[in-house]
Image (cartoon, rainbow, N blue to C red; front, side, top):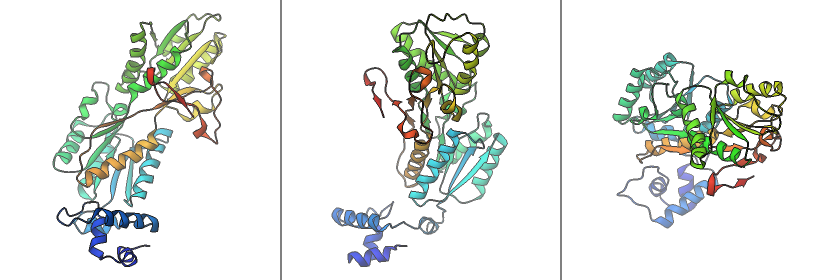
Length: 358
């Protein structure tokens, strides 16, 4: 393992100069010349130097470890988020302790553990029924100088609340509203005879997705009918027409396959169907489901970057990460290759921005 002393010796510089150049929080009164600092950083990167985070934090009476709470749910979204967090933390040489839970009691225990054990910051994906006392405790932790970032508050906001509930603590979210817009723009280009929104429920995340979807049709003054999953069974749909359907989650979209089949309609031809979430089954379904994909692996990496900025005293702003739409067979696209997801056709923009990229 390359040490600071090795870099200093190889470059013919003093240990203190090298240390200041590579410090995340350098002494403003001991500035290293810009060209020297760049030479040191380039050499450190070339040799694979990794700072000893624990030693650095212990010297200040702290601990470099990041504590992270995630739902104990083996979904693509949660797994990708965990991978992204682990990848970025590893690249920055910060240990991460993951805590998994199902409910508010598990979250409360995570909070208690955070109070009793040394760490440098918290990443949390709170449960939807997080207790008010737990939320206020995290807000107090932040107000007293603790470093914390809430993730995906849209998908974990109780039905009676809204995203403003989290305004006291920094957040990182996927732009669910934009995802709904992507789905609407995609279906609109097919000029269907009628458009439908199938709603899963009244939780905040679904309302935001639906609002994004409706906003595009409202701007075009095209009507959209909202139906419940139960009402879809009794809908009268003609085989001679083409219909555009948006279901605000993939599970709901996949449940509609047998409904349309019973009516003699073919998904991808008579019915163009778009979902939201990109769950595993949407890829392997027949036909494969066009869906909005949340880039949670990228979100995990970005979460660590933002938290580290906070840890080192830099300000951070709330941020929305844009999703993309995966164009598959249920709206006339190609079947994805399981071994090459990076080759899927992605739609990333709306309206005048609209373009398709591979």
